[in-house]
Length: 125
Image (cartoon, rainbow, N blue to C red; front, side, top):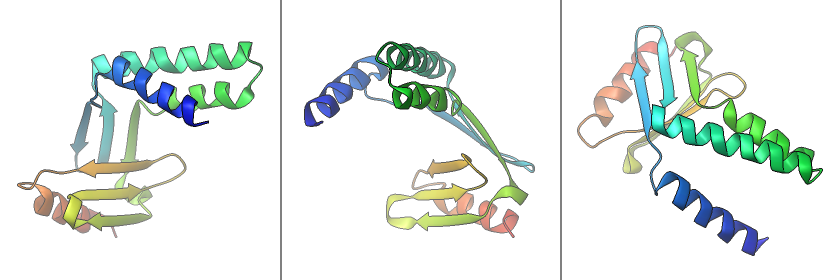
């Protein structure tokens, strides 16, 4: 298991070049979380590869993980769907939990953490 984790880590570092590029948009309707185009293409290819390898390895778990990861390229959570919000001030992170598979981590800068927090507190009831 340890060897597999190390191999997976190396592959992910090579494919994604050590970054995970996101576009997060907060609007009057809700929060949209989306992989940037280049990153989304890589995610789709890795997901497809996981499905194919899971199929040939007769592993429904691996194939299912590939299918699930492909579906998380873009997530939109309406303000009314948000059930729970957790603020981690020290790390400037806001965890937003909506419906099934609508969980988003907002990684803020020192400059915008407080303003993003206020927007979320205002819109989540």
